[in-house]
Length: 427
Ligand code: CMC
Image (tube, rainbow, N blue to C red):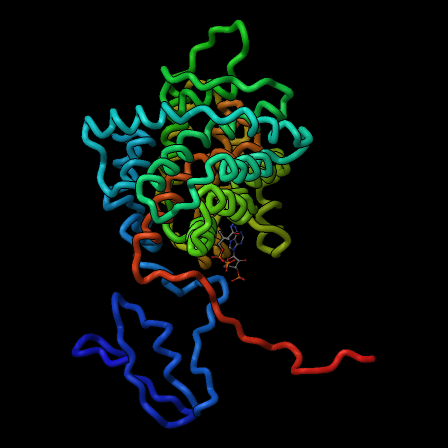
């Protein structure tokens, strides 16, 4: 517990009157040091209680920096605004995984590797097709990612660095293919093989929307917008799904199983499912004149304003700003989505309202992204699927960092047991 001259916290335990000196490192106490603070021999020692892990650092990371108060997001030190403007999603994925932007040659090699692994074993499509078409595409995606574990048994060698690298490339390459299969199965359409001539985002749009005997061109505006959305969603430090990825990875499960679990965590409406909920909410509101009464219901606690609020950002989400600009570009090409008018009015009223100001509730990444997806003809239930396609690079970067971190162990939080004492089953 002693610091050896570094920063410390000295606390007095009112139960025993004893003082304890705890080491402070990077502005944190080591939770394990609390164990030494005891009232007696039989006391297991003090723990910290943190439901939702609101104030617990579970790792040291060099991947993503967020300052929620100032609205800052950086990948490996680069501001998200500069990356979205100047770099492609695949370059950002490389940055997240490898720590640096690729050189010209590294980028060519990276693209070549990704392109080589775009195809997926057709057996997995049989699995996707076994779902009723009414099933949510996230259920199809999660199952098909898990199925890749069965097809790549060597992936369980998570300490083998070559195998790790191969599975990372496979996952980034194959996610759009799996996502497009889920989309097409729901519409009774046969899968479209990947087109290696196209960009990552362009190929994804192609695999979803290609129609036989039609030579449609992929709109460069939509392709660019989708690529930017992928970049904005690529990583967001220790959020719910990334935490799930690290926790599953901590058991040394293979990365397909860990990504399937992370995607399951993403699926809920308070995380990746929120942009889907935003569109439902906007449709339910129906028109600009009903916005005020909706805000009233939110303030009375009847529902949440979807696409607003963030565990970390207590300021405008920097991703939401970029998305709003991207939406303008997209709507120039596709025509304005009538729901945009409702969204702008919601934002206007909410940003002036005391309820939202006091609680520092600002639009988050999901508030406008759904409107862009809709303009691209992407159905609402695919929004979270697209989030997963983009986030896989972040999950894998975090997983890799976890595996290389000598301080990490299998995750095993403690609990405060408040249940019954010992009792006997009646005869
Ligand atoms: N609408 C209305 N009130 C809200 C909202 C909202 N969207 N978000 C938080 N609040 C209120 C909440 O009721 C509470 O009020 P009070 O103090 O009176 O009880 C206060 O603000 C603090 O809320 P909280 O639930 O403690 O905040 P949190 O940090 O645990 O929740 C959140 C963060 C994102 C889950 C929440 O803001 C929310 O549910 N937002 C809507 C869903 C959403 O848009 N999610 C996408 C997040 S961004 C994408 C991602 O990274 O996953």
